[in-house]
Length: 357
Image 1 (cartoon, rainbow, N blue to C red):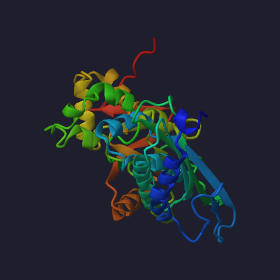
Image 2 (image 1 turned 30 degrees about the horizontal axis):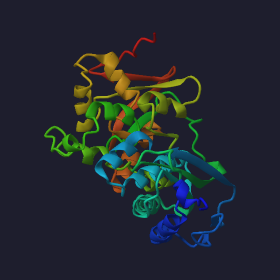
Image 3 (image 1 turned 135 degrees about the vertical axis):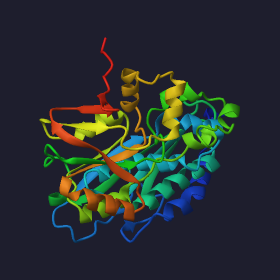
Image 4 (image 1 turned 180 degrees about the vertical axis):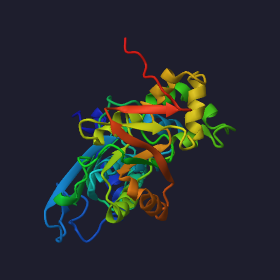
């Protein structure tokens, strides 16, 4: 008897069924610039006229081990939002409007229903950010992933007029940093999150008084997409720099927008840190006053701030007003100084970075 591809663990019929199930979600993201339809070898997107000197900005990212909680909960409808958010939030930091998105989904044994549910989240993220989902890849890789598990990553392309690119080059000492609140942990630091909360389904589904919710619901809250708020803001205010607080937290991401010779001071008491981070600090055994260990949290998580924008002092009020108009909760969290890196202050005292051994 001849051995078929299906005998090796790959069922092309499941792939066809997956495409059929996800087609409606994909098409819901189309606009007048999308040419063709799902199923082509490449996705077509026509650039709109009107930008004098267009520059394309691209970004790619994944969801990381947050996926483990989707597997534990058997909940797959929001993880695609995370995949989109991680990419489009990056490119909007340069002032770019997202144009289109592509996703990559890989699993050991393809479940058409699961992949279609994941893609429904991708489509929702695309609708929130104004990006068209013009293509992707669904890979069935038997023996490579554990049963019921998968990985997803994405790729976004945006556009900005060259004269409007935001790159931080005009940031100076005395400028102001405004933090825009996050929706929670977003999609970074989940290797530590999983160590602290564990992966036991039963305990994750028990209501937690300190969280005010079930842990699994908090930990699967999708990453907030800031595209519309940021694009609206930069039309009204001269924004000098924008930092997406992803892996590396405050410590690594905020300095990425500064020119040489500029650092910043952040007052971590300037806003209320969400309960999930306080609970994790307790689970990690971080005592009050243990500034070195607390510093590590700000070097890992967003700590309740998903985006940071840098503006001149004269633009503080207008920035806060414009962000409020788009539904964002935000506040002044710090200022730029001469120097380098990030100095975190708590109760007026600088948090000391852990000693490197």
